[in-house]
Amino acid sequence: MSNDGELKKIVFQPGFNKNTTDVDSEGKWVDGNNVRFRYGKAEKIGGWVREVATQESTPAVDTFTGTARTALAWNTLDDDSLLGIATNEKVEIFSNGEYYDMTPIVLSTTGVIFTTSAGSNIVQVSSAAHNSKAGDRVIYTSASTAASIGGVPILGEFPINEVTGANTYTVIMTTATATTVGATCTANYLYPLGNDGNGTTGGWGSDEWATSAWGEVGTGSIEVGVRQWSLENWGEDLLANPNGGGIYTWDADTSLDSILVDRSDVRMQLIATAPLEVGSILTGSPTRHLIALGCTDYATSVFDPMVIRWSHSEDFTIWDPLTSTASTNESGDKRIRGGNKIIGGLRSKAENIIFTDDSVHSMKWIGNPFIYSFNKVGKNAGICSQHAAVDVDSTVYWMARTGFFRYNGKMSSMNCTLQKAIFTAGNPETLNLDQKEKVYAGTNSEFNEILWFYPAGGSEECNRYVAYNYLEDIWYDGAMDRTVWLDQGIYDVPYGFGTDSTLYGHETGKDADGSAMRAWIQSAEIDIATGEQIMFSDKFVPDFTLADGKTLNLTIQTREYPNDPNPVTKGPYSMNNTTKKVSYRTRGRQANIMYSTSITGGDFIVGAPRINVMPDGGR
Picture 1 (tube, helix red, strand yellow):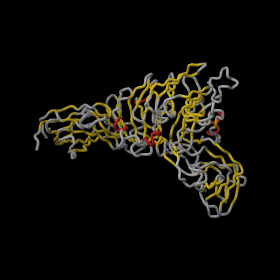
Picture 2 (cartoon, helix red, strand yellow):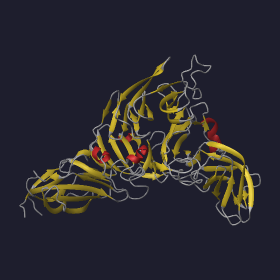
Picture 3 (cartoon, one colour):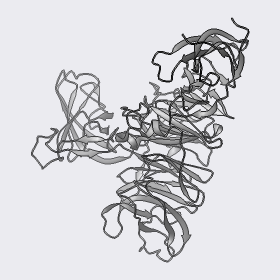
Picture 4 (cartoon, one colour):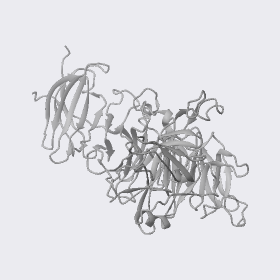
């Protein structure tokens, strides 16, 4: 090994830069996974651990039902911590290690008739005007004979297997019956199953009536959207709205003891006086009005995706401005302009921010007689999804179809160093616009981060994230299967909701639910000396912080020309806290380095290393 040469210090700018070539990005990091930047330095992110059921019921249920689309954590007046989870299938509350089903019952029918045959587990159900589809769920109660059919339990919840007519369908029991049996009961139909993604469908009613058989795909097709929900607090109570449906309420004071102590089935109830077709809801700031974004017009009773309506202050049951309380009634409505439909809204400190598919509007409380004023504050910045915006210290950040924006009294586009990778077609990190409604934004306040989870490339579900450190103005990204993110506050750690219907507590340790979490980071091409002549390098002097007893791998690649398809790779070399230098022999005009760790408990913070270089002749 040579003792000659010059030790060159390598200082990298924080964040990832994917907007230009690796050579043009000299002095920057260009890629990585499971890393963040804090105080200008790259470090491994925190790990996660799944929430395991602690309830006494058997069997214990460790997962929620369906794919999470939003969540809300709050405390009751008795200081009970509750977590509401809305999925494409249900609304559930997580409390003390147990999931409780709060999904509304939309129809109850008595005199439902069951029939089955000996040796079959398929139950024929006769229920007038059930208005259900395959996959919807029904709960059977109050059997007139016994809690079983031919010795097989039938009471409880079942998914509908096949719809065979307007008044008939089938469900499947766990085992076949021994005898031919008939029975009756009450059927309670839960809010219908929602779509897990965007697409098209066909079937009964998608083309002209009766041109295809029941359940058969017709010649026509209709577009279907992913089931989204809005969840809002009203004091200690919960409000929920499935997009396109009504508004439901769950009274914590009267319901919590019933589900936690008595194990009673207490579900959300429809607010019958509120608009019955609503895109999303928002609790107004600074006064408490319940706001419906995109809903049935008061005057015409026709759904209008650009109409906003709000309830009377402190009373979500009063929506009619001509009621007997007209002298004090603050309910009202407004149709805004600038787009085709309202996508969602966000409560900020002094105003509400309303997003359409093209524009951004400020909705400020001004009191009687107009209650709210409206002002368009931006255009050509249509938000990706209902949940793609967050508020941080009265600045609103959101992900649009073409980039990132913020509003703090004035709208502006953000200079994102990952812009090309995320919004240019053909990249593995590119936003899948066909599923953009799944984008979910959250904050990780401990690390000053805003996180956007989104479906990338050909993925139908959220599989990547982009992070923005708003205090240091730094961007970075990575791969992670999370559909919803909830910051710490009510709970001690942030919660991530997996595509596997599992709740994960994040920033816990440095592993992925007990398994090693691979983290790595790669630099752009570094000119060795001036980059004009071939240089020889034989020594790397590290600068990092590692966990005691842990190792970090180093890999070095060199090239003679930027487009050289066959770089020389040295390593990986394993380093620890006692490593003074790494010796190797390589030559080239440019080089890049990669740090990586794939061991349990692995952790690192990287600083400014040095490499030994000296001129070398070409061959």
